Length: 338
Image 1 (cartoon, rainbow, N blue to C red):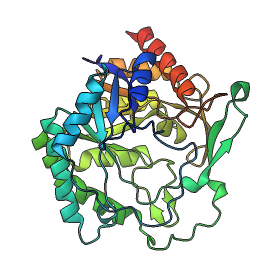
Image 2 (cartoon, rainbow, N blue to C red):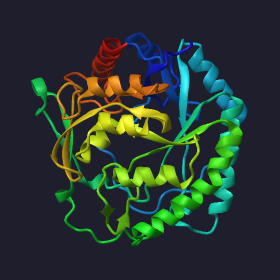
Image 3 (spheres, rainbow, N blue to C red):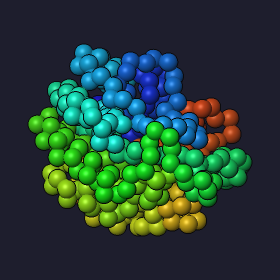
């Protein structure tokens, strides 16, 4: 399909007919595609993410063009567009270790394949150690008894370094990120694929001795200035911006042309950066109607993905009921501003 300029999107972990039919039926128009062939229904992420116990993984092999073409064709056969693909970034790159140049070359191959297949965005994270230990489940504490997810940094009073990871200050992380950008952005330009980095989430500035360079708006500004190219972009997350205590709509208006893809979600903030609850779209601190209006005003072209959702009664691990509600709300918000 030809997706609308602002498309309702969803990351998927499989290309089963059940998954593709369901998301198209509820109004999803474009997806972040998987890079592996998988026709078993697979939840995209657990309700509570796992704790990282050691260094980030090795760089996987470059994408196989024929395989990605097969996956893309399968998705398009269900009247869904492909709006993005997730790009893995290795521990060698994140930590500046021997082997990072070879891993960057592998990323370059991935970008060339994506460009040849017309995949417009490659999304990635630059998070050496995610602070996942602070997540918890507020079972039955949401509206009507829905299960919510919250984050509280106080759940991790022990901030000793993780074995095999160690301590890494902000300038060390920035040196590695800028090295990565200087190498990869020209590859993205040549391939015609925008690379889009997600803010560090949760956005605590340092976790177990590892700095998070993209944990505030100043970091996002520095990233865009490091290599000033329309192919060096942001993966905007209205939830993370709100977690910071910032105005998500104002951030959209500031970064507009450099936003390549979006997580469109809401949170209730109890302490900026350190304590918040993930909510239904209509209950959090972000004004998502104003955010939708801002995306329209800046001429944004790409996906809005609900990313997370509260777990409704009767929902399985894939939380389809919750996503159906979120997508319906997003369609209504889009209609209200266009």
